Length: 131
Image 1 (cartoon, rainbow, N blue to C red):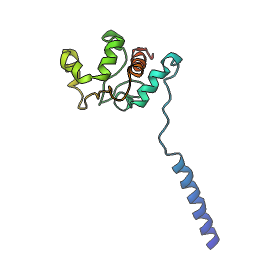
Image 2 (image 1 turned 120 degrees about the horizontal axis):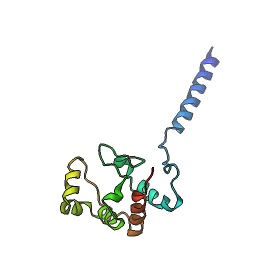
Image 3 (image 1 turned 30 degrees about the horizontal axis):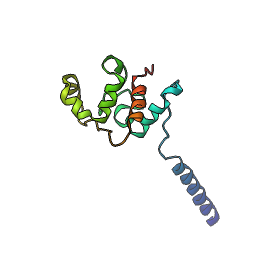
Image 4 (image 1 turned 120 degrees about the vertical axis):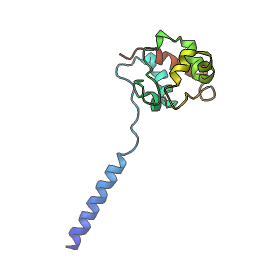
């Protein structure tokens, strides 16, 4: 009887160890069909944790707007500038000021977290139509 109890404890501990090993954060994967030319921008999106507010596929969340169809209002250079200094652009652009009122969290600036090449790659990725 004692050996059966010990055996059950050992088996239970093994199951717990296997389950715990699989509980780590899931590694992000690029959107299906994303061309290689946009992978660097997607990686910047991942590295800057943009998905936490805008979603894995830029679908938007309560904390950040949808980031698709941006080419109707943005150029690559404007996106680079905005990702560096969002507050300044929001203050100078009534459309952005109005949109920003819908979100409790302000867009952080990344001027000190990424260089222009990285932000350019991010802008290219954001302007790419995922559909």
